[in-house]
Length: 156
Image (cartoon, rainbow, N blue to C red; front, side):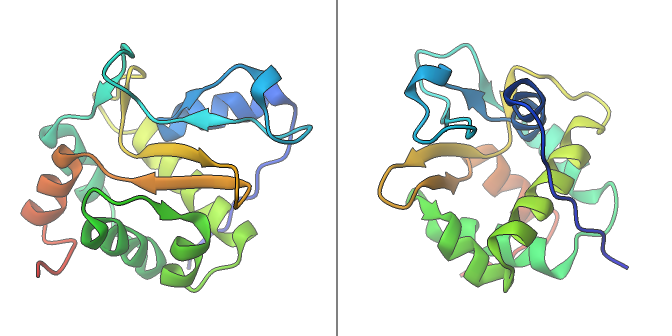
């Protein structure tokens, strides 16, 4: 049975969820809408770095991955360096935006509760899409390699 998590709360509480998902918070005064935290991708100037292949593999094999999350990971893998919007990832998972948020929240919990988690690393790169009003995602090379090694994705 799959559980769905929906997050509600203050900006501080949602920031904690974002941190557990491996995204970096941008100052709130740049927020695109009241009550929504804007997050950005890690950049070479940031202190944060991608998770190691070893840690990503630990995250992936810790417990079974649901089919919707597997579909999201496959879409991100297939996109290479291209960003995928939340809309595209909702289509890949066949989830609504709320369900997708819960899916990513659950996966963020998986990441943060995996042995060796370092809060200064990220599993997903994110950037705010002003046109769509939500995040776009991609994965770093280390996660791509872990997905391949663990057989989570079909390689093309």
